[in-house]
Image (tube, rainbow, N blue to C red; front, side, top):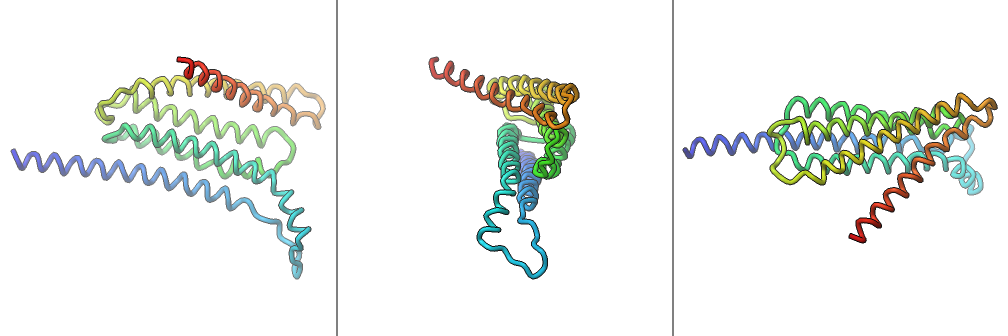
Length: 229
């Protein structure tokens, strides 16, 4: 009996260690992605034998503002996804092949963030770069939702026995948010095609800001309702 208990304990420790490796690997991907985005922000190179003066340095920083904005926006989304990843994995006690595959798919799309941020930072005034970036965000959200849904509803024996009602409610809300984001991307692209003047096509991106404003208002309303209760 004692030997059997020792074997069970060793097996549990092994599973915890392997699950910890998966979490550490995921965290490393998040950290590398953020680092790569920061590397994209750099001052333009000056001609040989020239150095930056204070005025030239300040002007260069002004030109870098779109890049800082792209980095800050990407950092926000990646931080949000990392936090949700942390919450999802907090209810795990084991792993299986399905979990590993879905986690790798999610990390694959997270790895595209530096590419998306770089094309947004280029700021060429067309819709396609920000739309591509928006699509990368959608793919990241969709793959994380598939991972979340698998853990809560499709996996067997890999989560701890706790009340997951809050997690399931969060999953449903995020699915609705994803559906809204897909609708916004389609509307932006259709608007881009409809606008005849090439110089005005960039205004199609304002659908994205409409979504962000609506999401903020809805979230604020939910908090007010929750506070009254």
